Image (cartoon, rainbow, N blue to C red; front, side, top):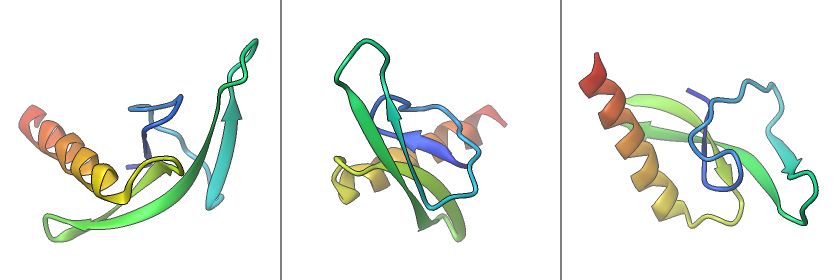
Length: 74
């Protein structure tokens, strides 16, 4: 899926072959570092970009929410 959870790019899909990336907001001191995390949810493995500042339990709940919304839209 490669959807960002938390940080500046929250909710956005980012295609990147690295295991992490950092983004900085122009004209601001805000920045977010994202780390690729793989979650086993609903019997499948999904990859997400999780902001390093986010708690892992929060990230899992957010990933579950994203997947449920996606499933409902199909």
